[in-house]
Structures are given as C-alpha cells and as structure tokens.
Image (cartoon, rainbow, N blue to C red; front, side):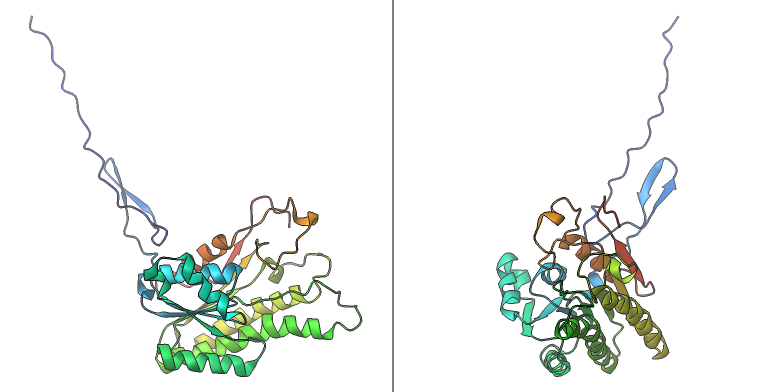
Length: 290
C-alpha cells in the first residue's frame, strides 16, 4: 500500500510590527484571524514639533530634564530660572541638533514684573508660547508654622509655588489667545496637594500644593468659559530625587522617583490627541508608604 501522506496546515507568518518609541505608544490591539495587529498610534509629540515651550524652574531637577526632553522631541524650549546660566549648560549634554533649540532667560517667578517682562520678550523673539510647564517651586524646611520670624520664608514659598503658577499661566494664556492657539499648561504639583503628610517642618509647602490643585481646576473652568481648547494638566509626584530633597540618613532608604519619571508623565499628557485632556496624574515610587 502506498504510504499515507498528511497535509499540514501552516499558519501564515506573523506580520512585522512597527517599532514603538518613547514618543509613540500603541493604544490597543485588535485580533484579526490568527494575527495580532497594533492599531494606529495616536499618542505622539508630532503636533508640537517647532512649537515653543516655556519651562519655569529650569536650572535643575525636573525642570532641567523637561527642557532636554522637550527639545529632543522637536520643540523650541526657553528655560526660565534665576540661574539662567545653568540652563545654557544643558546644551553641552545633548546633541548639537537638539542644543540649538534650547534657550534661557533669567526670571524670578516671585516677581510679577519679571514674569511679564520674560513673556513679552519671548513673544517678541519667538512669536509666543504654545506649552507652559509650571515647574518652579521651593520649600523652606527651616521652620514650622509657629516659628517666630518665619514670615519671609513662608511668603517665598507662597509667592513661588502659588502666585508664580497663577501669573505664568495668565501670561501664557494671553499669548495663546492673541494667536488663537490651543496650547497646553502643565502644573507640576505634588501628592502633598492631595493628602496631608505630617513631615517635620513642611510648614506651608503642603498648603501651597493644595492651592495648585485648586488653581488647576479653576484654570480649567476659566479656560472653558473663555471658549478655548487650551488644556491644563496637574502632575503630582511623590518624593523625587532633586536638590529640594534634604540630605541625611532619614532619606537613605526612602523610595524615590527620578526626574525622568515625572517628565515621562509630562510627555504623555502633551502627546494626547487634541480632544483628550489629562486632568491629573499621580505618580509614586514603588514602596512609598504615604
């Protein structure tokens, strides 16, 4: 008898999937027959290429990392800081094609006139602002609310963390409104803006971040009432390894986020489609107790 033969059904080869980069994320997968195909990707920074971003508190930490990331994504970035020369130093740490998109200007966000002058200069030199990252913030861990003579330190925290956010947002919106731009304002907040933590000498810092939470929602309401499509996002990280974190044994084993983690959330919020608004992002390191 002739040998029996058996036909084997061979599945079609899986199609090659397009590479996924940090600037593009797949939204979902759809099943077709036996194949998994990545659906069209919608989270991208492409719409911001060539647009202008302002980052406050840009000389170190989250601000410095944001400057480099936004410039790498194709934006023209102006870093505002009291130590503006440190923003220029960032150029040395990125490729030449990125470095030429990084600029700096000295600005003290506790001074309304300094803010107004900085935004006017940027309007004149760069045509206006499309994205604002309200990152400037300070803490004065030298006193409690009851410490005698603490007024100057407490006012510095409020002027920087609260009024700085309000005034920079105002000037950014006016620039966007003049040019009919649907821009984006990102406020770097804190988990302390959502939950009280009894850390020694935090004094008025937590209250300033609760204010940022309320300011963000007030801005959202005001922007809607203005009939604009300008977005506003609050990003609230847990403890981040920056210059603001005191040195000492008490933080030796404390889980911390890195500045890159927070900037990743900024890029995510900016990369959403025009009809999508990320209201709040809360990020904590794994193992954080609070």
